[in-house]
Image (cartoon, rainbow, N blue to C red; front, side, top):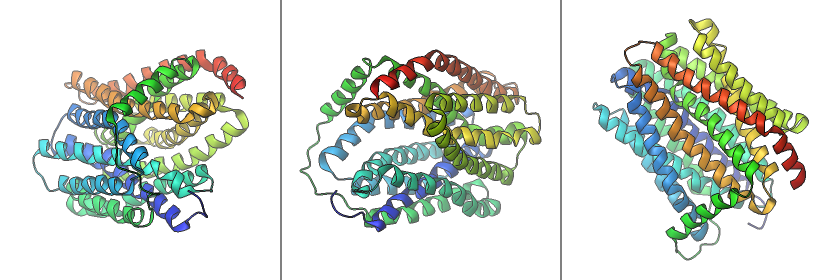
Length: 409
């Protein structure tokens, strides 16, 4: 980690974020959900189970991968291997006719995509060297947003010509092409002997969670953050389905809607970042929660396209802002010597929310399956209730966060 920063390695590392966000946007947020529910007539609960099941597997195995990453120092090979498996299974989705086979391929593709991030994130310190870690991380985030828009724009012509099944092969190719520089130019630090203690990795996770119980305010905040991420992750996964089945958007309108949301997510990151600096974390996070509440209300009451178009900018700002404000709160509330451990729990909360939220959506839609579009409004209504509960819990926590932050400072 000594020496001057390698600009080629930094650019290559950041472009992996550009690459994997193409998968996230095209597969998770847009085409696969519609491939299941529209093209193959599958119920939402099937996509919910596939998404949640793959995320559960990630949550279970991530501590092991984290241990492998730290104890061996080898990150490039597992990153490349997991990415290539994700690329291959993504490409195959469009080639199969059976719904169950597509769901299985998606589970593998998403599991490998999510698991690869453990090794990708672990590369950051060695890539940054003596540079600003936050700034280089920001390059990745910015390129990720650009990748979302680029992926939608580049793949849309294939979908126009060949339907949604034609989206998966070009998405896989783009994912691989823009990931290759990271495989070539981001090298591992000095290799360590290959020794992995899987049991120790879970003991470390258990100890981290146990230690968090000594920091009551931070633990309560993790609960608040888990609840709002239930909302965020579910909207990301199912908004294209809602836009198509309830509002009546066609493919091009959905693509434009997602691009609009992504642009405002970039702006939201900057705006909320400025507010964190000038108005504080509590104000900023509270504002993000109210933005999400407003967006959910608009989704529920939208009876046509005009009002629904307002959801995109609001959800985008809320999406970009929730990560900026929440990370700042974790930094404020964590003792410096434990910040890595608590960010591990923060990450775990995100993974668990990716399990619970989609299952809630799928269950509500399944329960009200005979009600046409009402089932989707009921599903958003359940997320609205979660948002209300989240705001209530956060309001009870505001003074404690401010007091705790002052004590740690």
